[in-house]
Length: 410
Figure 1 (cartoon, rainbow, N blue to C red):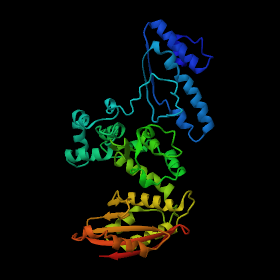
Figure 2: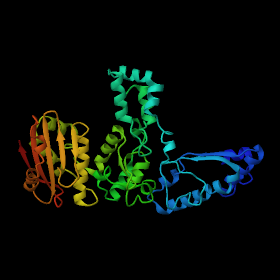
Figure 3: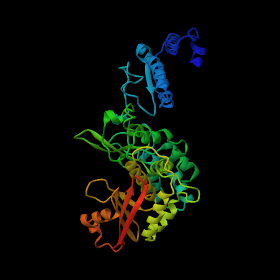
Figure 4: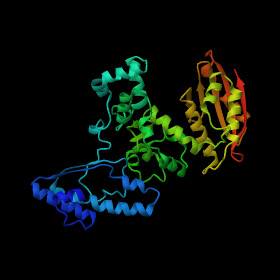
């Protein structure tokens, strides 16, 4: 405001921020004879910085609400206003007094306004993609596929084209190195704390169905953290149910999925000593070589040596810890998790081996293994030439560790 007041007069510089805003608009209109254009970036930053402190957030909300109400009172002198932010505060919004704003968050006409489309990548950056391909000793076709896997996949409407993250994409084209540039710019500490605070089951992040009203507001974040994850760019629209008007979400690409899950490790996995610190590579090598017993012994030792300074439901803790672990494993081998009753809990596949897991809580490994047999989970692989392992695992909520496992090889 001080910069604009140097141009249009500072007679109101001692007044409240909204009065100064009105004065600047008035004077700009009077002195130029033209309506003004107002551009606001990160309108929600003060509110996001105060999340977790209700008193301070209410103060900020009140100030911002008064400030932005000027957009309505001065409407005749405003040609155009454009406001952007990471999140949308809905029910008690800073915009609740306004009826002249159009929310384009879910407007199909603007789904490609942010990011870089597939067509734009080929039209404007084809030569540079060739340079990246040469630098990484790969074909241009493979390079395009790698770029898509790493940085594409943002959907701002249920049937919209996928958009590339421009920050990561342009950095890759500049450096000719595939890295997780966007994720390295900041860490989702608050998002993870919200997941923990709400005791949210991690495997439901890509299963739960949300209405547009829920998805488009973070006012319910103390009950459901998914809208915040969506609006922050960690999840994107995967599917839409036209009949029930509900959305399902997913990670947009490998950069976000891998970066986010790796960030979850210290929050959801038992904290280990330096000597027995978590090393996913050892697990991966044993899975790839068919060392099922060694793999389970390492997993058991991992939980047994942990420091359980963790909050929340004990059973949910085990499910979330296993979700993080097997998702990490999935970056190196094929892991598929099933959550529908009557289907296996976890399927892990490599070039030479198949592992079928069934997990139980406070029961027994024998019961888990028996379910694999009775439900016929191995039947689809009867003609598969790979070696198959059935593994039943029991977790004790009292001991907070694996309390037995059984391995049966076919």
